[in-house]
Image (cartoon, rainbow, N blue to C red; front, side, top):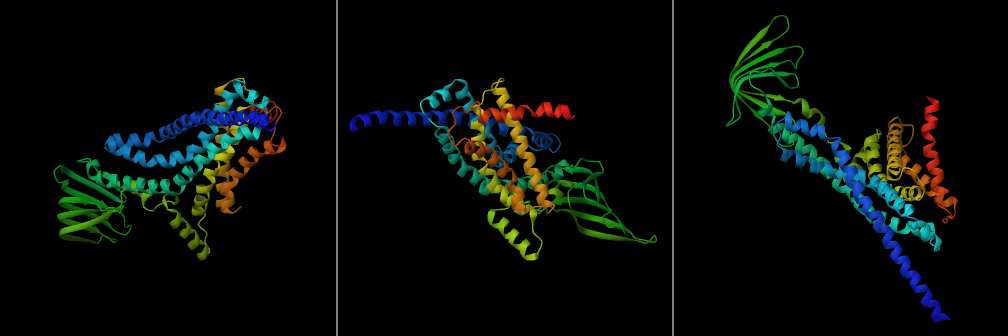
Length: 404
């Protein structure tokens, strides 16, 4: 009898192993496709700025592609948890539509056992997502800002048109007759400086250069062989003759890139800013929110995977399009909760860390509640757990119309 029992158990173990690999494969492929689709959608939302660099700023397409490469890590870090939800929803939905989930349940496979390969897929993706959020994305964001600054500096002279009063600098109006393309020398330069309210300065020079330094947003206009007319109050004025005169100026576009944002800070620098803020008595809410997001967003892989499995097993009428709509609705809910938590933290209504993890807490409760309610084993998961969630989601539209 013992030998026969072993012969009966081994095929079951083999079938379970095959089932795990099959479910993981059916879910992994939609996750990969969803990751690409969501990332492309996020890139399209930023294409207008990239096209503006090519058309209006004269930036080469290759340089724009390099900027896009630095932008990709943060986009992938944001889209990967969403791709897990959408991919799991579509993959399990296909298995449920072909009655393969029903067949597995009829063979005694529990809901938790079916969820195991999906959780393993999420566990494989989680370290990659943490690496992006904590290391790769901050470095890439810093390189993106440096690249934009460098493009602005190198393209500034070429972007100034001849015989036009240019307002490219804060408080300055620059005019020149022509630009020598060999050495980027400005010929017959005239500048109006209105940065000091008490005085107005007019500068005329035979030639000049624009000098920029790496990692410094301020550029220097070096003027050669000219005169400076200073108009002071009470109709007083002075005329100054110079051989060389430097005017420091800030281009308009650089004002948003002067200081690094929390998105660009490394983990050590981020923690140091938080400690310094607490010692001074003025907590840096933005850095605390960013630190919490770097760990909270990767954790969303697991509740999204469970929610995708739950909704995927529920019967739907519209097929993939309806499941895709449910995924978009959940993305929207997550975004609203995330922004709402950030607003509460900035208003000092809740702790900054708590405000950053509010969407995680809500979605973890939504994901785990059905499993806890049904004791980790459902007799009919499609008609109970998932169907109730879907019925609630479907009822949102009629309720909204009635309220309107």
